Length: 476
Image (cartoon, rainbow, N blue to C red; front, top):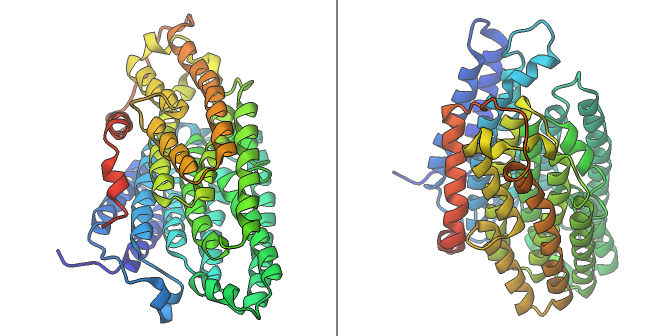
């Protein structure tokens, strides 16, 4: 098969999303689940095609359109990451379809499902553009495509008051973070005359440039990206939005938005890493994020809220990698986070429809549904960092990077907070296997979800034993 131009991947995803919206709007008598399966099939084809994209030369010597867009190995890898995440989220949305009926009283069981599966495709295209963006203007455009799609997705079950609250908070705070981003870009451009990330390094090295003004602009940009990755002190929206949003959307926010935000953060910070103030600022944010995320998760009794604070904690571990600027460690951690987080949310999506989202609703799950209980067990122990899981090796590589860079304070705090994680993650395991419950009804799992959950279990354990494929992925 011949090589495929990288921009065709995003174009294919956008066209697929528009086709599904058109079919939803103009074809009346159709099983809406067909649209979900069409989206999954289409994204799978794009994912396969992405392995035939040839990485472009260094963006440092690019011109024309390539001043804005790169298809280096890092970008191609995270395009595949975004596609895989979206496929798994769409499978979760099929399970979630019955819940949508509550938002459309008197409608059919599949009401709203067409739009619900089309919007993640536009989000996916935005994420793919975002990881390829090497110019602040393109970063802004891609980020808005992602954010506007999430505005609608977070508020989709609009008759639920908690969902409306989540949507309002996400809208207001996201708009505020966008304002910080634009203001920061303006400061950087005013100080250096550049918006291209690769030309910023040369501009900052110029004795005539105003590095203080550029640094202030970088701080404003960091506020916007800190919002996207749920870093302290920009995490205030996370618990309420995660709890109120539809469960598959929460999973998508937790994995997709965070991964793209971290990659953009790496690209944006690269020109500024020679400035000592930059590393000190990221160090402080990483420290606060680790402490706050883990301590706030300890008393939680709602599983979605616990996973929200857990998401903040994992942003702290990722920021250790950013401080050390170890792209391979960050990449492996994000892959591990994808597997174990989507595994946990996939089980939560199914179980919550039968019982609820509280940790106590998982009492006796090991007896009622051994398959789902085992899947949640693997997800929880991997998130906690138990050996022979992807989560353990993810933390190991992050901490190893901290050792190499002599970031002892971050290492010590990171290891201590891992102990906190063992407590709050294993509360879920205790509920499933040690707490008794009067419910005896088995929880059904459809075939596609069973295959997806099984694949996530296998991948979580496999990467915990043999991580080399991911570590080597950015070399070729």
